[in-house]
Image (cartoon, rainbow, N blue to C red; front, top):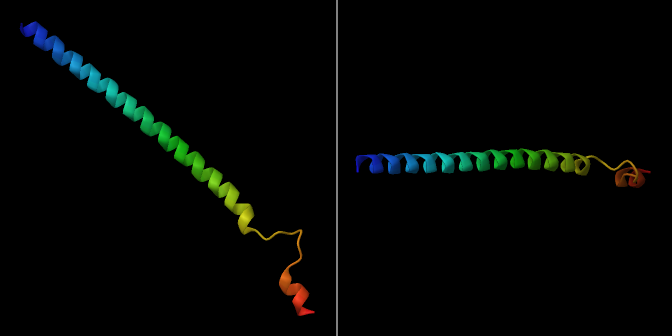
Amino acid sequence: MAQAGEHQFRTLAEQDGEREATWRARALNAEDALKAAHTEILAQRTPIGEPDRRTPRLDTRLAG
């Protein structure tokens, strides 16, 4: 009877370890996805914040 209880305890401990490993892997995947998203956002914001060299600036046309 004691062996059955010990076996059940080990089985539960193994299941807990597997769950923790699964959550750890998910957290790492989410962290990687977040880093990739930040990189992509910065890459898209940079051209938006830069002036467009193809169109003339409005203030130079009005100055003359």
